[in-house]
Image (cartoon, rainbow, N blue to C red):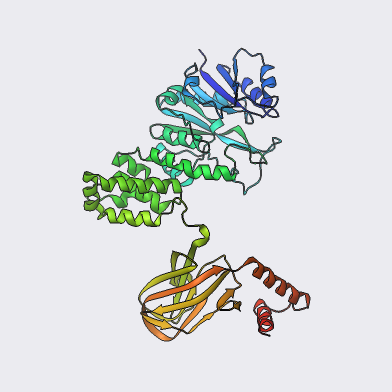
Length: 487
């Protein structure tokens, strides 16, 4: 009986598969069987596979493309004590299996052994694009399983699938299969694995993982895959929902101690709040919202949430009204507004209130609570990174309408609209004297400056620069434009 079963998946990588197969067959550790599953490749991959006559190879070709081959039925035929996954465009160092088998044999409590990774390009050269997502994604450090679960939760997958060697009984008994997942199947497996087992990452770079220039990796940064990732994170959330023991949960999430009240904690509530307040993953948010809804519908947990946290169905309704997981409101309708306040000092980030609001029917209204602060001037930034037009601007401070305000950036008037030509528009509100302020309410009609206007504006600036006014400051330059517009 072979000690290791290697599964090599193949699909349309005829340029690389020979190197991949050779790196497996030439391992210093020889006691393995090699399953090669070709998913109906349309190139010469299958011809290359058939060239090999090694008795350790079991080659299978799908009659049609099935989009994968990791089924429980296939695994049930594997004979190895350990299981290794390989991809047809990746390469192993020749001592990979030897070092991993040795580690697992000496550490029976470890469920799987991974390796450090060398990322390579299409030509097999070491990949050196530091800003690419894969350049630093794979970790070579080690943690206990609780630390890994915390790391996965906040930072995502940091392990390389073709570097893995997993105990076969763990693979089968823990059902480390991820049918239906196209973007996060590996991540799903590792989270599920760490729910019960310790893992180890060998420090040597024993796996060469190839990044394709056209992002054709299954996990490449394509629009389709980015959408799929957010949807599949819901399945990851469900795995974390399996952690029900309070002590274990706190080892995974030490930050959840804030939800322990008199020694008691509702683990589901704590997980939901962590997902809502500490992540920006829509799949986590959707899971959290549904969890809270179920908790307040259950008579027992409803009372527990009220007793421990003062949390009721009203709070759930408030969350479901703000949490736009289905993207009902377009990104362009959201405004991130800011109100700066000062007395004798200058405007600063320390004296700023941020408020996210929505422009509905080209109108917004936002209120800021200043809690009796002494104020002499305010600066309101209606958004950032967008060219906007404003009309019917209304500023109310503690119930009194304020007319003394100034748009600080260059703007042009189009009937009653202020077309503001700045990506950081701001409005200065001068109170004339220092006074206590409780509430500021600002509302206006709003729209985005039309593209044709932006082009005309750019042309005006370019025209002036051509006429030898390059030495003028931007403020002076815009002043010239403004005077010309008036004439």
